[in-house]
Every structure is written in structure tokens, then in C-alpha cells.
Image 1 (cartoon, rainbow, N blue to C red):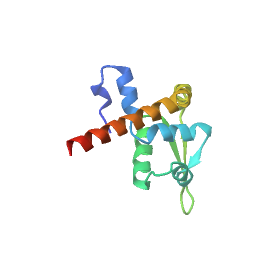
Image 2 (image 1 turned 30 degrees about the vertical axis):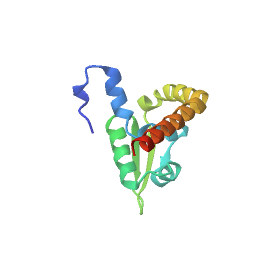
Image 3 (image 1 turned 90 degrees about the horizontal axis):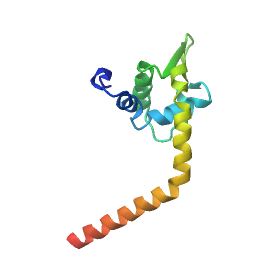
Length: 125
């Protein structure tokens, strides 16, 4: 976790809150409503239990996600976006639109860079 007080610029603080690899995806998954931990984990292919737990704790500490524990055996834990967390959704929707619009260009640029890098390594060897 980072020190929120070290940022003079609000945009830098906000980006720091959601910049970890899984946080935006967690918020995006929770946009449709409450999810249980395992349900959320299955929907985020590749995340480990440890990382998801840590990311959820940080999102909760930042006031973006709420956690509700039900006194059952085994305990049932559900996560949902807070009111403030839901205010991020329009920005994420714009990001999704941008990504869909430019994904082929971005992928092509990445492949080109990889190819050029590979050629440079071959020349150096």
C-alpha cells in the first residue's frame, strides 16, 4: 500500500489507488453487482488467491470496495463496489471503448516492436 498523503496531485493519487495489475479488473467485474470471493477469483483468470486477497483489502481500505462477511460455516464473504467505487465506472467504460476502438492498432504496434527487438538481438549475436 502507498502513502496517499505523498501525492500533491489528485490524479496521481487516484491512479496509484487503481494501478496495480488486478484492481481495475476487480472493479470492472464488480460493476454488475456483488460477488463472492471464489466467484470473483474464477472470473479473473490467472490471479492467485493471495494476490486477490491483497488487492481487495487495498481497494477496501481506499473506500472503493466493500466487504461483507456472513456468520456462517464456512463463512460467506461478498464484495461489492461502494458508492465512490461506482463513480469510477463511467471512466472505465470510456477506457473500454477506447481499448476496443484501438486494440488492433495497439496489438500491431506491439508485434512490430517485438519483431524489431528480435531483429536487433539477432544482429548483435
